[in-house]
Length: 261
Image (cartoon, rainbow, N blue to C red; front, side, top):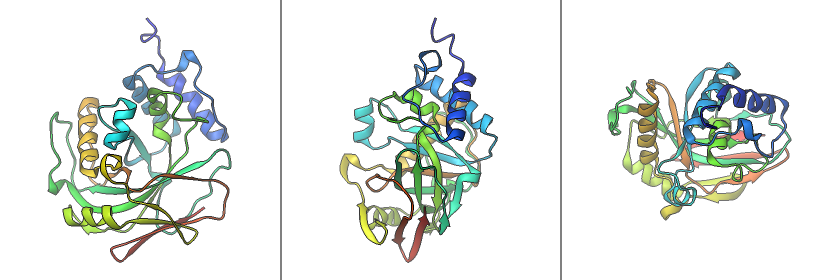
């Protein structure tokens, strides 16, 4: 059967070669194309290991009710964060010139303890060390990541390029802080307002995303580690940038998240 013949390492090798060359693919060759999300995650694991980095945490994408409904997904897609590409606020990124970059401002949690892979485990307040905002920079290895299918995009580590991490908004989990961030966050591009928070079915619920990560990790037999950062998906409307000379900024609760590219 075609599924039995799938080689995730071969798929990962092509994606890694493409990433290192800063080139883009129309799509994966048919022989290397994952046909299920499970095959996509197998290729993602191979890609992450072949790249040789260490994992700093996790990212979630396509996580709002509207996005999941349109994509026919039961929960968000999960990607892995490479430590070397997780940077503090104020950093300057050197990014490839090929293709647009998508910017997503997100709520993130840092885990306070290991989370064992237990099916049905819910989020508990003591799981969270602190809450912050992040900028995720999405750069897929595909010219059009939405056209290649979710298994291929999953294999591509859900398009992860970089994560810029802001200072803590609060210690632990504070629902009032989450509400305030969801109501007041505005992303500025080069000093001008560019993106505001999403609402209704277009908005990602960060705690639902964290619970989805727990469920994914339980299925994979993966222990989430204390200190892992979990960036939960778009808080504000995503937007694309191209070229260089940009400054991106969010001010929240007396703090600032920014980066330059």
